Length: 405
Ligand SMILES: *[C@@H]1O[C@H](CO)[C@@H](O)[C@H](O)[C@H]1NC(C)=O
Ligand SMILES: *[C@@H]1O[C@H](CO)[C@@H](O)[C@H](O)[C@H]1NC(C)=O
Ligand SMILES: *[C@@H]1O[C@H](CO)[C@@H](O)[C@H](O)[C@H]1NC(C)=O
Ligand SMILES: *[C@@H]1O[C@H](CO)[C@@H](O)[C@H](O)[C@H]1NC(C)=O
Ligand SMILES: *[C@@H]1O[C@H](CO)[C@@H](O)[C@H](O)[C@H]1NC(C)=O
Ligand SMILES: *[C@@H]1O[C@H](CO)[C@@H](O)[C@H](O)[C@H]1NC(C)=O
Image (tube, rainbow, N blue to C red; front, side, top):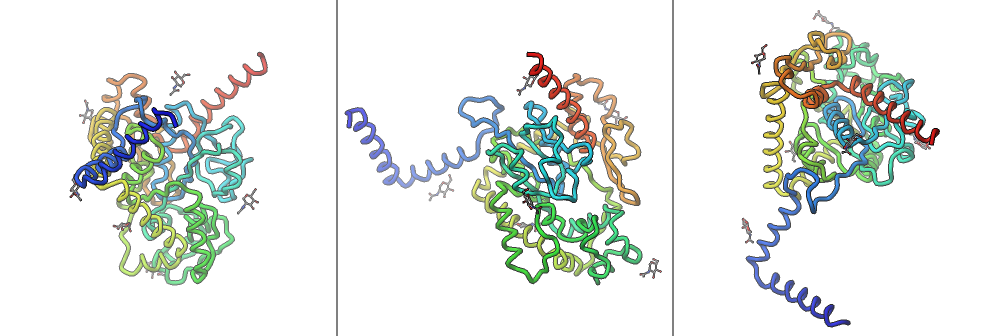
């Protein structure tokens, strides 16, 4: 051993001894560790910060605030020049949902990909074929009772729901088996939708506890983060830490919401019935909500509180600069003039809300800023088209270069 190495060893041993002997300093150094675990909110690139993780598969589930999350991911992809795997034209905007995902469903102009975030029914093997090996898998779940109520109102053409007299949620839950047909294409919205979207079997009976546990374990193994809609901001903070993203990267406006008149509060006893009918989803949700809060407490409540505050303040600044107000003005889909911003509306009574960019505000913004504000509130179908068009152009350019050079 050289003298230099010996010296370093002695220094290392004495440092550890010092720390162990001095209780106060020990506590101090633990605090310092926690602060390292809560990176400061400088903007990239800053020396000493981990590079942002750019390979991400977000499995978009139905009726879970997933459109808002997808919008965050699309904007991140654009500002970092990443490639987003998009559905082939024949697959519509949802990778041929409810068919199980297949790598052939991806548009050839959008490969090789860094990001995937459109609706699909998940299949791990098939997705791994097109995604880089260091891809982080992320998804989002919502409390099953409120989610089911939302799906019942939103999927106005779902046969299982439309068979019910007066289309009553209460009547459906009295005898779900009477109205539900497991093999109908749209039955995926009428039972254990989250389990189905994540590739599981929505029709396993509630008594098959072993399957439910396996299902949870499978999701746990594949996904680095399972977000929870009811705790969206907290989930975003975990996301930011997982991917080493900036605060700027997780700012958002809530998309694809219903008018409050088309929501309803559930009568007593109904949530329990919904959970019993969707028992696989209920188990998934309870498991991952608990796991979200364990991760938040590991990060440290002070760190989480600080980041929540920063997020909220940055959000308000962005809203004021884009919309001139603290929250953008919600409008009914039909009243939105800019077609790029008009959200899709299901047939029937559900009133989906969206946003317009106020003219007087956007006039004072640069083109780049206007573009940023526009993308912030652009609904998923339009955004998907925009991305497909720009990526196809890029694909043709590089393809041409290859064949001519
Ligand atoms: C460690 O420090 C924190 C505040 O920095 C204090 O609240 C806590 O009581 C201290 N713990 C011990 C064991 O001294
Ligand atoms: C993305 O590409 C544009 C145009 O090629 C370039 O100006 C910009 O610096 C790139 N951004 C990043 C984050 O690589
Ligand atoms: C998922 O993909 C693999 C490989 O293509 C296939 O063997 C498997 O059957 C698929 N799973 C489902 C549920 O379709
Ligand atoms: C459907 O609603 C109407 C009016 O609200 C009511 O008179 C009728 O009894 C309802 N039918 C059933 C089967 O619940
Ligand atoms: C999620 O878990 C937390 C912590 O246990 C709890 O406070 C919260 O109510 C749960 N959320 C829902 C929607 O059940
Ligand atoms: C823009 O116009 C709206 C009404 O049309 C008004 O309420 C708002 O204050 C105006 N904002 C600015 C920044 O002029």
